[in-house]
Image 1 (cartoon, helix red, strand yellow):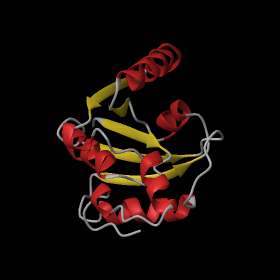
Image 2 (cartoon, rainbow, N blue to C red; image 1 turned 60 degrees about the vertical axis):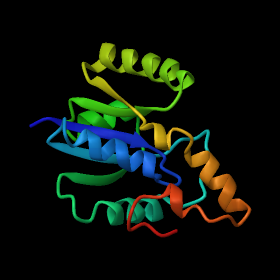
Image 3 (cartoon, rainbow, N blue to C red; image 1 turned 90 degrees about the vertical axis):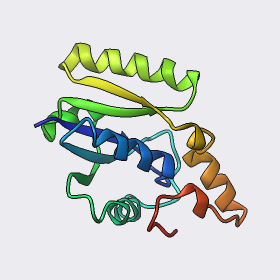
Image 4 (cartoon, rainbow, N blue to C red; image 1 turned 90 degrees about the horizontal axis):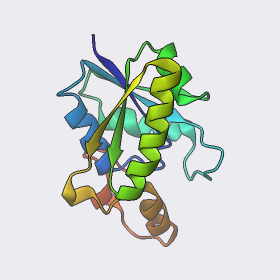
Length: 150
């Protein structure tokens, strides 16, 4: 079985994230969305709320699981027996960061990183922008997956 993790803070989980997972299901038998704790980020939603939002988005997708983890991403991958880390790229800056982390993860564990480019229609969407808009009371429903309400 080809199992991948799709790690992130997902605060909030956007339609761009959703698209990467949907496309990843054409490559992997199972994807575990890992909600990680990033000490450098101040989150808007609790990990439990993010878990529920993502579970709602994939309620009809039995090959998608969602878990909260509080360890290095590579340790989480090993814990759930995932041979791959799925990542999405929006910009060149994302590439530089992901390459460094991907190379490091492969060297220390053998886990490969698979990168999918964000669909052009979603390239401008980020959790940071969504949080900023929400802080000013703006409707972000166009940035969210189907069946997700915040």
